[in-house]
Image 1 (cartoon, helix red, strand yellow):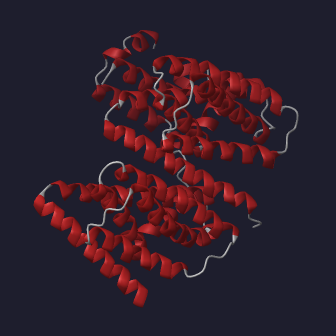
Image 2: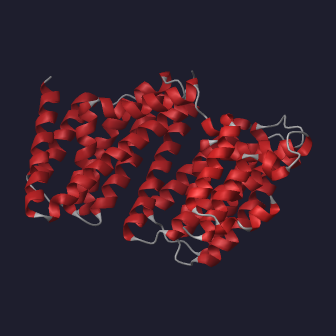
Image 3: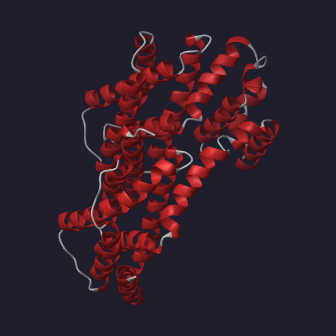
Length: 204
Length: 201
């Protein structure tokens, strides 16, 4: 073993992977770590909560789209500000602090953010951050009110923050098309679509 | 793939399989060290807090020197926290402190706040202190706190060192953005789980 450890830096990645897999086969409890009823269930339900609600999906994607559309530093400021403020809204929901018209706020977020992209509105970065943050409170509150009944609150929190972040990254990735002429119009068209989905949820 | 990463990966494999590392693992003090390591490595809260701390260190412009000093600082912090926690502290307060630390570290990473070297090392030491406090307070029935703490220190150093190394490797602008976004995610998770402490279920 000692000789092998001394030569480990000579291993290829493939050999290392094979060794690791071999060890994990011998100790399945470690390989599966925290997979179990409560924890995995909480993570899954938390992760799926933003993804299964189209009103959440379009708004989160719109945040990333708008960030990419505005360029630096909005490309990172908006996706950083949103989860932070959303968590505060989530905390309000968890402890039971009421916020009026949450569903209207969520639908409005899709409309406003979609229109910002569609109309190519480029406000100062601080104003964009404030707009995004205000809407983040509504999204967070909606998640937060469902948190206490989750199988595992910690896992649920991680799940929904990760899902939110990944939706932002999806928006950013699509928004990066803006550097090409066809992509520019594709991104603005996506903004129109997002605003229309928001309008549907507002009327529904 | 650099030799450092290979060595880190191999070390992680060994840490996860004590029978290979300790030869006669499975009983006595070796088992307690293993428990301490796994307690850190498999607990998402510790992993996220220590990762945020490592990201903060790697973000500083002072470079490798701070990263090198951060390791002893975090070890010193965990040891101090373990000793202080033997005085039967209030569990709720300790958990609150720990989760608040996670939020603060996440916000500092997200904002890419520039801090001086001494302040940075102080923050790292406090992170270790809070980790040690929570470990010992929440695991009061460990057969041997010293062995458990040794394991936890090894686990803490592994998590902190790995995250720090990974963040330093990636100097690209996109990677810096991802580090900030990761910081905001950690802070968000911290805010939400802290709010649960105020809910009577």
